[in-house]
Image (cartoon, rainbow, N blue to C red; front, side, top):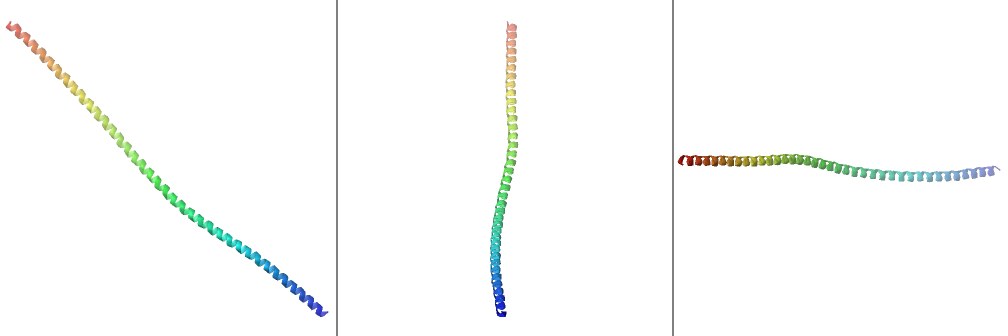
Length: 138
């Protein structure tokens, strides 16, 4: 009887030990799964961080390109403003030259008319003198 009790105890302890080993194996499997899951999550996080870093670098490059384009546009706008100012000055100069040219033409025409009038007066004076000479000479 003592031997049977001892065997039962032994068997119970043995079964408990087997059960504990099974529980430990199960827990180890669960821990490994969690570790693998954590490792996969860590790898995924690392990949996402890497993609985020690459995207950030690409955005920095694009920002630099956009800033350069904005600077080029601003420089072009400044050039256009300067060209517009020059264009206005050239138009004013052209208008002034045309006006000066017209004034010069008008002065020439006035001078020509004045000369013609003087010539007419001289002709009339000469005719008058001829008439007087004819009257005097008889």
